[in-house]
Image (cartoon, rainbow, N blue to C red; front, side, top):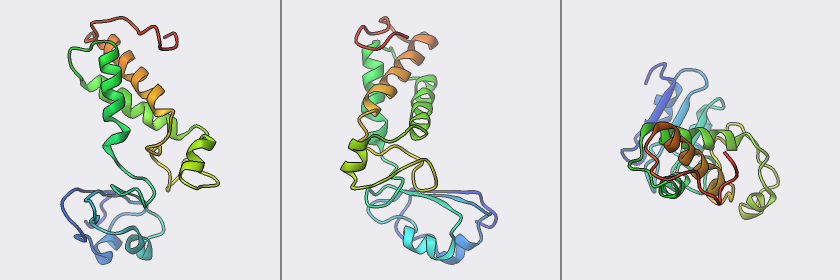
Length: 164
């Protein structure tokens, strides 16, 4: 992994050593996603690097990568416009909705749910929290819009959505 900018691990526990992590390029992105034990634990990673952005599949570490951020809301948007399929445009729209949400102020209800005083976009907050109630609004709408614009929707913009 010498000079690597990104590591995405989905293979097994404790496979990346601190020594290997030191070989990565400056400001690396490390997604150690194996569950329940990631390829490298955040404590070990931060022992040797203070310049990385790290995510795991675990809720007890910052930046939990979890399909709960996508699947229910992608399906909701697709179902609401009776999309004939879930295409790349719809998936990309969901990603952009997630990205945009991380740059908005985090509601008090989310801070309370995670017992936090403050949360803003940065190395420890690159993804919305799974309990963020805004997810159920912005992602389905983005997906539905993309379905309509890409021609796979078989129904119009839903009445219960805000105007497009």
